Length: 357
Image (cartoon, rainbow, N blue to C red; front, side, top):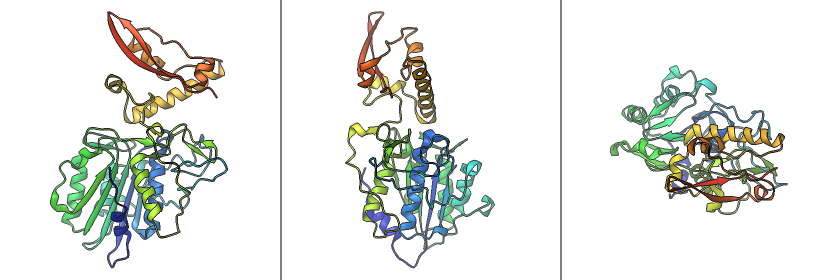
């Protein structure tokens, strides 16, 4: 994917028209840390780029900064740093307008269309104004997620059509971070003057980045992915080109390599096509990762290691339990194929043992 920083800078440049931004983190829970980190970073980028804070509307559940397992209470980070190097707290100064149960498709629609019944700030843009919309969350074909519901492509396009009919913008840029996000704009009319980019096409997953073991800030593990690859790319590119010193990013980390990119999955990448079919997606996958983490901590206290996904493999192979990796093998993070012969058929599956701490 190619992101042109010039497009963003043109939106933020000085002009007679007003500039507006709507930013949404549609998820909840510490396992989705990356979404709210992306959203707060986006808030810092657009305000540093010249959009007035009163013209920025942010929707986020706001449940990760003070989450009990956050090693930095009251702080949120979107990129890692080395030990001894403080991270940039994107939560500092991040003004959230709609929190908790107010983060819904209905509220998002009302904000976009300028409906005051939303109960807070809404777009009041005009025919000469420019609007930037950034949405970050899970998704599927034809829908994007919210904490307790979802928004379908037809609903999103209807809201954009209403904005167009009401002359609420001259130009609108939409950045959408979600799996299968390309499907949301498959039927976008060409005459609405909307420039939309997505983290994935209509059939593929989006990717998280700065995941374990690269989730350390000042030497401390966050225990969750810090960002999403698409969002991190456009925002870090914009940080580099930003003339303003309001938001100063730390020196960039080494270039992202395939070994540092993680699909949001408890299994290692790359996977075979058969294995990919067994990988859970979206929030179900995040919940499974959290359950596996709790299970590992429990069995460490009891002096033995339970591998991630053991219970799923046990059901899948009807009681054939893979051998547990212990000692030096587990310490070395062994990742090896195991072959099971069953009814003269070979089935390949991968075991991944986390390092004992």
